Each structure stands twice: as C-alpha cells, then as structure tokens.
Length: 512
Image (cartoon, rainbow, N blue to C red):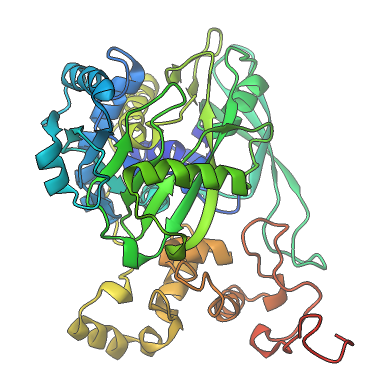
C-alpha cells in the first residue's frame, strides 16, 4: 500500500514527487520510459515564461506566474541551470502594436513584474542582431531559461533522496477504484532495461500497486491514463514542435528570448540562448496521430527557419549541429490546464492538457497538489526532508585550481571522454550511480552533455558505452542508446572500441 502513486516522471510528476516528499507519505513515481523526462519535458524550448500570455483568471495564468517566481529558489536549492535573461515579444510593423498592448494589459492583470513596451531605439540597443524591421517589443524582465531535463532530474533525485521510490520502464495498463472509493489498484507491466535475454533485455513482469491517491501526470498519455480510471472528460491532441539547435559559437547572438507576436497557433517561432550556451530556433505546431512521433521533416524545419529569419535575418545553416522535435500535450477542446479530481474519482488527481506554460507552472501545481493531498491524508511534515540537492560538477565549468583538486582526488577526472563538451570519465560514472541512475547513452548525454557537441557523439559514443557496461556489469553490445529497442551494436560481443573499420560501398574493392 502506497499513499500516493504518480504516473509519469516528466516535469509535473517529478515536481509533485519532490513536494510530496516534504510530508510523511509513502510515494511511488512510475515512468514508462527508460529515463525521467523521456517525453515532452525533454524536448521543448526550455523557457520559463513570465506570465503575460495566458488569459487572466485561468489556471494557466495563475500557475504560470506562481511557478515563474519559484524557479530562482528552486534552481539554487536543487542545483539545476536557470537564468533570468528576460524575454522580448517583437512587433515588425505598427499593425502588430495592438497585440503588444493587449499582452501588456494581460501581463499587468496577471501580476507580472516589470513588463513594459520598449520602442525601436531601445530595442535595437538591447539586441543589435535583431532585424531592422522591428518597431517595438514587449519586454518581460522576469522571463527566463532553464534546462528542462536537468530541472526534472533534479526534482526526481531530490524526491528519491527524501524517500520517494522511482521505478522506470513501467507502463501502467489498468486502474481500478476499490469498493468504497478509499483506494485504487494500479496495474502495470515492468520491463527492466537489462536482463538475461539474448539481446540483454529482461522479461516483462506484471505488478500491482494499491494506493490511496493517484496523480495522473502522464503528459501526452494523460487522457489514456484517465480513461483507465473511468474518466473520459478530455482528449489530448499531440502537437509536434520542431527545433533547430546551433552550436555555442552562436550562443551569444541574442541575450533575451526573442518571441514574435503570437498567433492562433501559439507563441510562434522563437530564437533564444540556452543555458548550455547554444542557440535554439523553433518550434512549429504540427498535429500528430502518434503521441510518440518525434520525427522531423525538411519541410517543417525549412518553415521554422524561414520564420526565424524574420527575427534574425543573418541566420545561417552552417551553425546547426542537430534538429529535434517534441510533442506537446494539447487539449484543443479545453484550452486551459485540466486539473483536479474528475467527478466520481475522489483521490484521482489529473494534470492534463499541460502544454505551454507547463514547464513553468509545474512547481506551483506541485505545491498545491502536495498540500491538498497531505491535508487529506493527515500527513505531517517529513522531519528528515532536505530541500537541497547537489549535482556533479561539470569539469568544463570548473576553474583550473578546482580541476587540479578534482583530479588529485580521483584520476578519472583527468580522463577526457567527450572532447567537444569536455566531459570526463568521472562525470559519466557519477551519472550512472546517481539517485536516479543513467543507464543509457542518451541518459548520460542529457546529464553530462557527452555527445551534445559539434560532432554529436561521433567520437565519444563507444567509450561512453564501455563505461556504462563496466559500471552496470553488462555486455557492451547490450547497452541501449535510449529505449529498450535501441541496442547500439547488434550481434557484437566484444569491445566496442575494437570494432573493425567498415568501408562504405565504393570505397574499397567491392566486397564490403
């Protein structure tokens, strides 16, 4: 019996887990993917919105502003990146000025601090690379940027350190309200990432958890989870957003997050620095039938770039190191967040339709849900709760004396694995043995940046795989890139770094 089972370890689920760990409650965090933040949370703009966009009086407006105010303290307590760089919504003609004035009114009504309209002279002084066509902009100084994956990981790790159980690779397949309505049975299929099967995987295991409270934080699958419990009141329409990422040499092009005047399709294409020092461009908004479809297409990326050139005419493809897409959990029939307990399902808390500004709002929603649940269950404060979490130092950001000290304590700090991002063996080992362990190539990449540089893991993938295999005690050929199906060396049972060089057709004698 658990007090609370949370379904989904994205930003909303992880934030709820962390807030609930403040109380004397038994909490289980379930995630279908092989890592936290494996869905929408991992692949978005990373923007902490100030709160001028949502319609006043909505849940989006309230939790956006409350969440934005929480991020500076959370970043300091949990040691994840956050920068309050401010945002600009740019008008490129006088015809767009009324839209800025409307956003200004909304921002003031929502309680956003310092929001104002800046005219062309000040605007171009703030952002010299901005298109000369820009005539004015809405400045929101409380806007910020974060790394959504690392923020989610920080919430999850702090929750685990405070007593929450986190179980990955676990897909919920059934939810039954017990007679009397005082608890739920949550049925799930747990398929461990590594095991004794020929491909290094494991056989699925059916599990059942009894809990007093369920939190549905399943993102694009939140409607599916709700239906398992008997609630069919909302439907999620997956909408993909495609992005282009430029390398660090372009990271200083803009200091603010640069928006364009929003349209009915959303906040539009942005150009923004990232906390990793890159420059991100995107997204579009494309409906997808499959909520797991994160593919990109040249047509969409070309359209994103064409829109971005309105803000940044000097855009160049030469700086691009990768592109990607994330899928948003939109509810088109109900444009506000879907929060609370459906009729007849007391104790079943929904976090649905959690698209933008979900990343910003998640900590505030978590605070309210945790307090409500703790009060209902009569739970006292956890006397051992520690609000602080310390991440592993990034070697690339440590000064010379600090580097020498680290290497003196452990020589693996001096073993460089990823040359592009200067990631050492010690950082990778620490990620593998963290409170929420990294067990795949992608998990290591997202935690340490190994593979995020210009070569996109062209050099560091084999040694990263070797380190994962060594630390987990598995065959290197069984190491996954991300999902269970993503074995990186089919049929190979030796050392990945000893793989023979294979010529491409036309490069050898024709017998390759």
